[in-house]
Amino acid sequence: MRRALRRLAIAAAGLVLATTALGAQASPYVPLDDPAYAYVDALLARGLLGELGALERPYPARALLDAALHDLAREGEDHHVRGWLASLRERAARYDPSAARPMSDSAGGVEVAGAIALGGTTQSGRRSELLLADDDPGSFAAGELRLSAATGAVVAAGRYVLDQRWRDDPDYTGFTSGGVAGRVQDGYVAGQWRYGELFVGRLARNWGPPPLAGLQVSDAPFTYDHLYGRLGTGRLRLETIIARLDDAPGTFEPVVQRFLSIHRLAGRWRGLELAATETYVYSGARRGFEPSLANPVAPVLLTHYNDDEEGNVSFAADALLRTRWGSLGAQWMLDDFQFESGTDATDEPPSYGATVTAEGLPLWGAQRWFASYTRVANLAYRTFERGDSYVSRGVGLGRAFSDYDEWRGGLDLALLTSAPLRLYVARRRQGEGDYRRPFPPVEAYDRTPAFLSGDVARVTRVGLRSAGAVRGLAWELDAGYNRVRGEGAPIAAADGSTPLAGSGFAGRLRVMLELGFLQWGGRLR
Image (cartoon, rainbow, N blue to C red):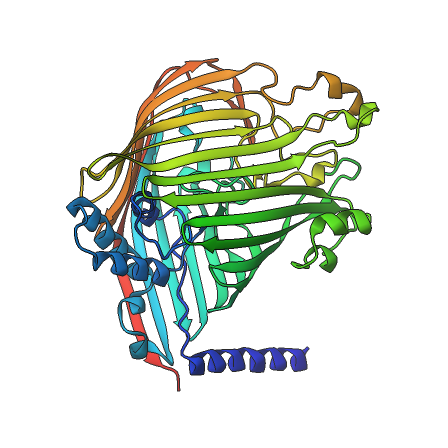
């Protein structure tokens, strides 16, 4: 053991020294719940931040800062838009102060940064999805500590959060004590190079057309530990995610061990981005990690059939096209579809998801409008073996709900230099289907609807959304009115189900203020 640890330490030191000598510079990620992404969405919709790919998030702080600086040098932009660029630059610099300096000033050194923030949330209901708001209002305090250290191409970062709001969140299953809930929201070590990346730890990710949540990888679940690898650049890359998920009850066993494997091939040519992804969740009472299912150059589908592996496989295709008149995006997920026919066992209803979005459609001046549509089938994310359900601690790894569709449209307004505003109208139909429920038996296939099962709740919402930051003060606001048909319908959650509230106001305001900021840089001797 001592010999192995010594070799590991030598290898780690060699990696640090090699990357330092190469002059590479790693940067911590800006987490997806930061208001920086409100600026990113608004700027992408207006044809800016062209250096960033749009189908995958989060971004390293240095990438955001470089893209913002590039567009700040342009002339003729609306002064509100230029204010957003400046705010994005300032926000990214809080995560990586060294990114604002020339690389030569920090090459070969250790850059340490951190912040302490206090604030809280006031909301009309416990559930995060305001279109399905319950009737349980409250106000909650929160605090977080953020730390990061980078040298050469290696970065380590952590974010430690205490948030009373999680105590009442029906999807939270973490630590609570004395009315306080907390967790390590982010914590990772990563090596970042021009032609690759190796990441170990936890961090929320989202793969799909912005600003919607991805159908296979999203920030709907609480962050979970995983291994992420990338080979290639933004132009063409091969990626993989490997994770040990939480144990859960199986169909034939009281408890099974669960694993996740994801492979993705993505590329970009001018304004066109394309990606193809396959995911695989497998489980078993005595089943461990299987390297054959983690091989990024061996398609999981072939391994699934050739080696007779049991598991839940799904596929997705993403596309995004940026034009002078806005961006058009789509994602299609196929969870299960029976190509055979002739027996009761092959009449299984199809499981799928689809989303289309149009952002930044011109209106007048810097004002824009947007529209989107999403549909997720009744049986999406679940399969006959309960342990293979596409969830992490009871919450979908992709979308947080199934058996629903939603139309959304509205105005993307540039009226404030401090933050973009989105005025929207949304209409949702939510069936009783849920990925936490057992898969229907074969004899029930013919009476199981593919979409909108049981009683259907219908909600129409008119709302205003804004998120932004001014210096150390960050906020997120979503306020509106819900008109509900189906009041009291049970909406599933990780801890069971809660009833849908009736018509009325539904909103949330979260405010955080950074009280302390740490920055230190030193030479690596």
